[in-house]
Picture 1 (cartoon, helix red, strand yellow):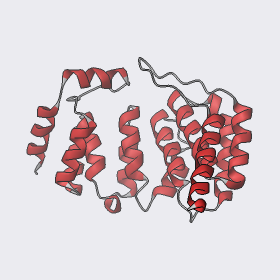
Picture 2: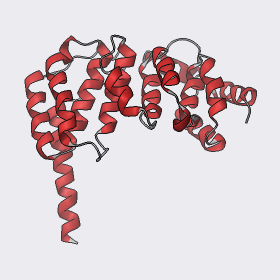
Picture 3: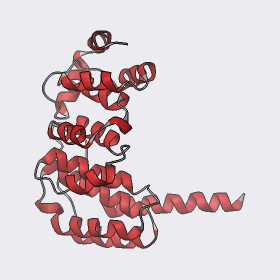
Length: 230
């Protein structure tokens, strides 16, 4: 599919109800109101097309940008590209989509280490989202994540709204890695207490980090016990 065909398809998928839903979640600016189910179907059809991804991102349209993150080639995202796209983040939806793409690039670690310290709310949010995703990387030792726990404990309540949410999510992810990190994450969660986040006109809530980590650990232990019993 070429650029014009994709944009026409996106427009045809749009609905007023989805636009209203996105608006309640803080998405503003140009959008068609396309569901993620339809975006996923387009991704399967297009697969990877980095040049098309660049064209779609340049539109500034919400769904076009989300789709751009889905079909871009992580290996072709340069440092300049990543920084340029990060500067244009404007809401939780596109930030989440961008962070998933950035986390797949060879520059992921370098970027989230930098972005976590950004003053811009959305760039920092993307950075902390990527910290949470990096927990699954077994090439990174537990000790690598300890400074992030220290930063969360020290700074979470003074950060901007969505940065607080992504830091809390990163805390949960680190704790779910298990072992010594679980204990340290639980200690941090106890010290910081409740994390206040304004979710706008939605029913979304900020999870209690300690409660979430403990539930995940209990589930993991239960699954291990079942596996051993077989």
